[in-house]
Image 1 (cartoon, rainbow, N blue to C red):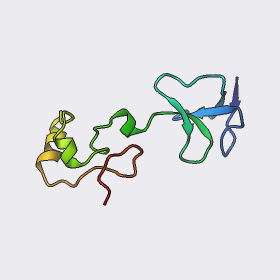
Image 2: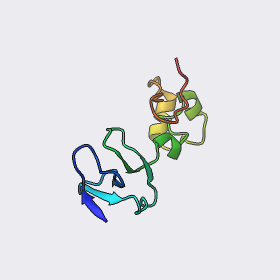
Image 3: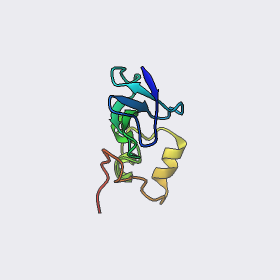
Image 4: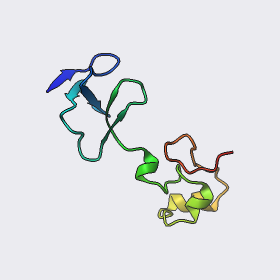
Length: 105
């Protein structure tokens, strides 16, 4: 069963889906599509099916670990990675990302 999504999110017993521009709410009896998980939306529009956090999906991504850790890992695969590691480009690690393993100041 589906309903139109009102401002502020779906009514109780229903959820939305990340990136779904249809504006529909889906019954909580309908599971999330493969690769998505049920979670509260960051914009306070209720909860719904959303992608897992970046650092959970890619724990060694340059946004999730210090430059030193990234550059000493097997994650360095592309020319862009090598340039990042071989230059004085600033550390891309973002401590605000959920699951980030950045060194905190």
